[in-house]
Amino acid sequence: MKILEIGQEIESLLKSDSDFSKIAFNYLKNSNLSYSLKELEEFMMSWSLDNPTLPDQVNVYNGFGQPPLTLFNNGSFVVDLYFWQTLDTSLHSHSFSGAFKVLHGKSLHEVYKITKTEEYFPDIFKSDLSLDTKETLNVGDVREIKRGLGFSHRVLHEINPTVTLCIRTVNDKTPQWHHFDNGLSIQKVSPEASDIKRLSILDYIYIQDEDRAENYVTSLLNSFSPSLTMNLYEQLSYDQMGLSEETVEYFFSKVVDKYGKTCWYKTYMESFN
Image: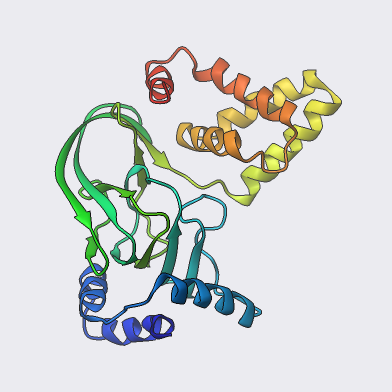
């Protein structure tokens, strides 16, 4: 399939131009990537089985794509294929740059202007959200992705499934943000293996000795940034990551003890009501 050649072709184009998002956009715009849903599904199944070792997968547990497939990864950029089975993705700003193309389905694309109004922490702030662009993306449509708060968007997938192809950079240092509709913005942080390991230690200690767990969880939360804490809070709400249900509830209660009376946490909880 042509999409397996994209990585090498982008590498060649980068030798003469360093503007990655422009290269990715022009490549997708000018490429004839026309496949039926059945062809894409058959490709997904055969590709996953015919390759004993897959490229390093960028999205594994975070639900961005159902499923997401990394077809090419050279450590600098990736070629991802996303099958979307849910209605929408959250309003967010990216840490990376690139472009995406709709291969199947239809999506409502909204681009917002984010204006920071109050900073609670370097990784959590309040903002005004204003809709800048609202459009329908159909098969063949391509949009550029810019990194940072200057490009904040939401994609509502109106057909199940919708399939998109994305060429984007990886390992960028720019923060990625999740913007809630009530104006709270929290930096998107993926937990490291060491963070998850510390939670598994909490799981053990809490089962053995709750008094010792109290000291451990207090030190643990003091070592976590507010955004990491809230990202773990969200992730544990739908995936216990191997922890017991009792420990997850205990961790949640300690997060509430630490932040529950703050203005930003109340705003956070309001976003789910």
